[in-house]
Length: 203
Image (cartoon, rainbow, N blue to C red):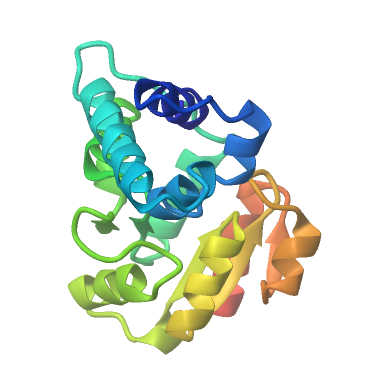
């Protein structure tokens, strides 16, 4: 969905659509960052591209035929296990609020999460603001929090906040990159997450 929407946003403002593999490689960096990249750092075009992408994404996710990106295997069971064990769970994402809400509602995951933060509310990752805001909302201190993610952006966000980072290998960056960015572990299966969290953040 992200690849398709970004390529369309580029053509809508008169730019050549970037290659799908390039868009995929840049997922997680934030709309402003990739907009500058795709426009050759043209400030006016970058602003147009970011605005068009956000408008297109909100339009699609709020439509009657909203995109339904599939879940990774095991995510629902992992969230249930963490919740049953007494952990608070949440999402901090550079995806807009409309897209996140649509996906959570369609997959019936909203009740399994205690907090969600998007760029509609605060500065996107890798700035620390999203994680700080999530912790503030649920009353959790840094030493009792871990960030789980699949990109360098997530790793840098965790480092900027001063919290531990667990990486997963099925997303957008390689295990080698994620280890180099400070991941304490790189998981290859969602089912391993609850046990690792229990060791990182003992009850």
